[in-house]
Length: 245
Image (cartoon, rainbow, N blue to C red; front, side, top):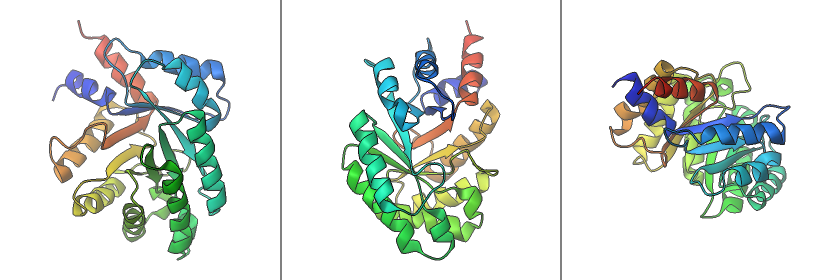
C-alpha cells in the first residue's frame, strides 16, 4: 500500500483529538474547521465535554461524530460520577463517549467495582450512543490484566475497547493492541478497537492497521470498528495527501 493510499484510508478511521487543558472554544472551532479537508473527513472529533456544543455547531451538516471523555483521565472508581458526566455529555450533543475504566480498582483485585462504572455508563448511553472503554493498558501493564480488562468491557457490552488516555507515560503499544484484538476476535469481532496515545506517523499507524487486519481480516477495519485517536497523525495524513496532484 502506498503512503497516499494509506493516508487516505487512515483519514476516515481517525478520531481527530484535542484534549488540551487550555483548549478554548476558538481553538476547538479551528480544529473542526481543519477537519473539513479537501480529501475527506475524519470519523470523529474528540474534545472535552465543555467543548461538545462548540464542536457540534462547527461540524453541523457533516457526518463527523462528536466524541467526548468521561472519568478522564484519572479513571476514578465513583460510578455516580461516571453516570452524571455521561448524561451531561449526551445532553450537550455527544455521539460517542470515551470512558476511562477504573483500572486501579481492577489492578487491586476489585473487578466488580471497575465493572460498576462501565455498567452505569452503558446504561446512560442507551442504544444510540457509542461507548468506547479506555483500559489504560500502559498502567495495567501485564497481558493478563489487559486481557481481564478486555473481558470486563466485552461482558458489559461496550462498542470499542480503547488502549489509553494519552495522558500517562506508556500509552498505545502494539503488544497491548494484540492482546485486545485476541479478546475481540474470540468474541466474534463484534466489538471495535481504538488505539490512542503517541501515534504520530503514517508508518506507526500503518503498523496498527496491519495488526488489525492480521487478527480480523482485510475488510474488518471500518470506522464502525477501528479508530485511531490522534492529532499529530492528522497533520501527517494531510501533508501526504496535499502533496498529491
